[in-house]
Length: 372
Image (cartoon, helix red, strand yellow):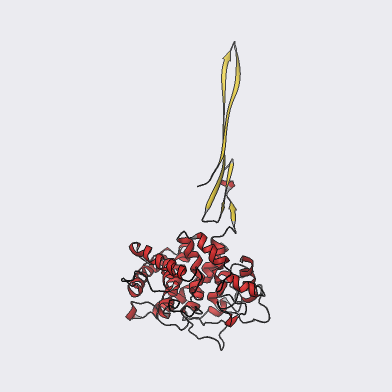
């Protein structure tokens, strides 16, 4: 399944890449939110003419499709446009490339500021405009999420990424300023969308997993929100019914909740709707939608690739240079760290014996392996 996600990304994303890997059949697969996780992979550097330069709008608005064409709108839906702030963050985190975040700080800031300026006063400054929402969710009574609830969240996602970039690039004052604004908007989001009677943000998977991802629910209601999310999953056979926004963060939220086995179960399921079902139908890449109404290989559904990069054991690093003698390494399965250690002490003493001095060397060794 992991290799299939990778192949779909290779086949369909091109914007912002130095290595253009799209197939001729799909030359305009430029929907940015869908392609976020592919940026630090496959040669993407976010500096190509179709990508970063397409974001250089002085007002901060970004079209749904870059370069702008007869598809989508401008300004685009916030869940698409916010990619101007999330992609540099993705590259910074996944590729450990601070320079990209530094170079595109103005773009990231501009798109977040644009959405902030267009917040709805009636909703406490939350963004309420947009026309896709949780695009391509399944059609059922408890599958859909109000568009404003999704686009308002996407604004908060972009602002949270901007805060992180500011902290990592030495912009302390701006980090504090945006963090303060973010805290205010998070509180407003909870006030606007939390149903105190039901104890959740709505009946759908997306309605509850999105605020969980950004840690929006206050501590006293977080458990009830998580329960609503898990109960909806269970009601649908532990299969996703969310659209491309919710799906992108579903597996990460499950891992945050400690539901690692459930996340793996969903990722490897083969019954409909699932990624495995798509693969089994051939030719082996992921479709644009959960059903077969659009079965061309597209990034939206495999956007859960974030989960593979951040939580599966797909990367490790060695810090043995800091532990001499000995060593340590970290493999990403919820940050398990294995430490190999060896302690050695050596002391020399001089003992006078019958008019001469003899040296004795006392040595001791101990070693072990520790897991937290």
